[in-house]
Length: 359
Image 1 (cartoon, rainbow, N blue to C red):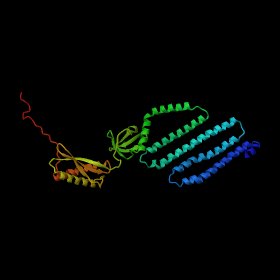
Image 2 (image 1 turned 45 degrees about the horizontal axis):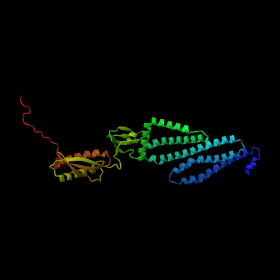
Image 3 (image 1 turned 120 degrees about the vertical axis):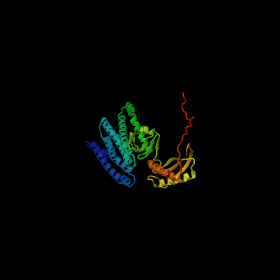
Image 4 (image 1 turned 90 degrees about the vertical axis):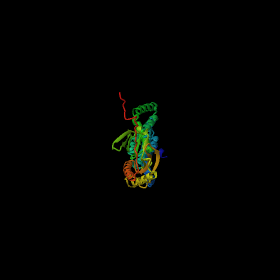
């Protein structure tokens, strides 16, 4: 009835369309008011900030979507040629698709923002801070590229050659950046798997030992004990056998090999050695104070009966001072107790005093 009333007036269709657009703007503002008083107020009471970020991301697209619905209805009410209507609908179609891409991109951005604030900031490695913006930009380009292909498809453009071209181009880029991408994905897997992390003391299969300083998007830095950096590409590190001395905990056992002469009283040797080990275990810095050291005999050697002394330290590097002090104290105690640490002796038996026959 309202439409028929305006249709009877001069330029009534245009007036009606303008009123519909104006009404849609008012409706959009009312929708935003309800949106703020319900959803935004509800999400503000939750513990997580993720829902707040998502609601904030879709707020503007929702406002524009309400106006677009009214605009589309207004266009249909105009008494103009089909070609003109078709052109306006094409424009609205483009706006709809781009609006959807904008909303989706905003949701993705909200997810990454929440991840950076709640998870990445709490990790010891800087890898998350480095890789997240890169992945975020790649996803953004991907979203708008899909939106562009939908628009072209909507206009009747055959996007098969475009997709094929993008595939070939992507393959060429992937081949050119093979090493870089390999390092990138290897670093991503290591960071997500948490097999090693910054601060861990590790040993590689080639004998390199040191602290993991940083897992970057291309390489990992390991600081050796002489305070030098060893920079290893992530792809090589991911394929290496790694011993992590900081996992599952920093504490570790220290095994010291000792040997005493065959004439020694083994009960006395055990008693004296354990006594020395307990003293060192409770006095040396970096030792685990409440650990009870012990020994285990294991081998009849060429000149000694060999055994292992088991101590325990808080961190890998603490073992050096522990072994240093233990050897000093044990040697002094053995000397006082008359316990002999034998050494190999080789006797050379000759044929006589004359080594060279007379000519």
